[in-house]
Amino acid sequence: MDSTGGTPHSGEFSDLARRDRAGAVAAAWLESGRIPHAVLICGAEGIGKRRFAFAWAQALLCTGNGPSACNRCPSCRKVSSLMHPDLHIAVPLAPRRGKQRLELADLRESVVEYVHGAGAALPSNSNIAVEHLRQLQRELAFAPTESPRKVGLIFAAERMHPAGANSLLKLLEEPPARAVVALVSAAPERLLPTVLSRCQRMILSSLDVATLRAQLEREGVSGERLELAVRMGAGSLQQAKEVAAGAFDGTRQLVESFLSGGSEQRDEVYWSVLEELGGDRGQLERFLQVCDLYLRDLFLLAHGRDESVVQVDRRPYLENLLEKIDAARAALEIDRAAETLRHNASPQLVLTDLWRVLRRGGPALVPPPDPSLARVRRW
Image 1 (cartoon, one colour):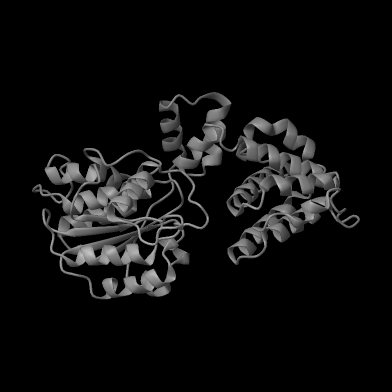
Image 2 (tube, rainbow, N blue to C red):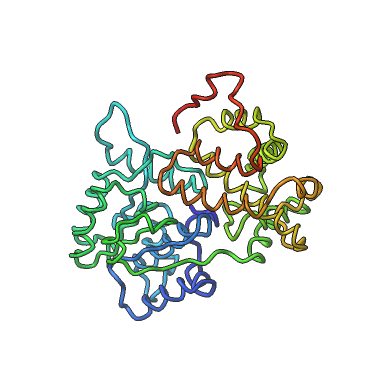
């Protein structure tokens, strides 16, 4: 399930309703019986969207007497085990070679792997294939077999193949009786406007600091690592857990090497970092995210905002770097870089522009000692 845990447990939906405005809205729909036929569950990465989507599906499919899931009936138990015949799920999958069609048994295995592998990064070339969306639409067209409704969940909906997203419009415009579709996305701006306009939005809020801290403490995280995880988590329990587990440590070391090398005009560091990133767009995006945190910390230190610094365990390094980098200008360059990447610009060019800012001008970038590094694998 999502970063906040497994499938829904007893009282889960009422807990969500108390925590988040989206939960309160969903609870009101269930109470009134006026259920939208299409909803979009959105919010930042790692804040519990998958968990929320399953709680929503469980409540819709429950055969108990109340408006929310009872967590006791066979229907609720089947949703929790992903075995409910009226629940249909589409997820992004990496392109398959040598096998044109994905059998239903394979698709179910992929869904289980996706759900229970929550937090694992999706391959950059994964998408929701047209055939899977059409299969979901065919299933929703049939009458429910065990519950009052049929429910379709589409996770990472922004990864729908364009043809599949267009095919979904018919389902959203003319929904079958007693069918509800929920799209789940951390990037709704990437969805077709025609799809967005047909969905009621449920926007989940980022988790507050107290919730993040309490959850990490329950898992045994403490001291400086706890403080770092809470601050770098930025409202995402998934990211906070990754920080606590050391998943960002390698990226942080690479960022520090890059910032120091740039401030000292050591161009061999640029080529070394470029090779280390290896042409992986996802790694570059994480690298730029961490760069942004460091540069903003420098800006905060320069303006006496020590209490807001994120990299709490790297204060000596930051203070040493403070006089060497124009943090304000570099932070603006990071923002520009993120926007440029969203428009599919070359990540290598983005990194080069940032390096030039760190170098504060100076002579032209020195070519690498190994000419092959200038032709890094295609991004």
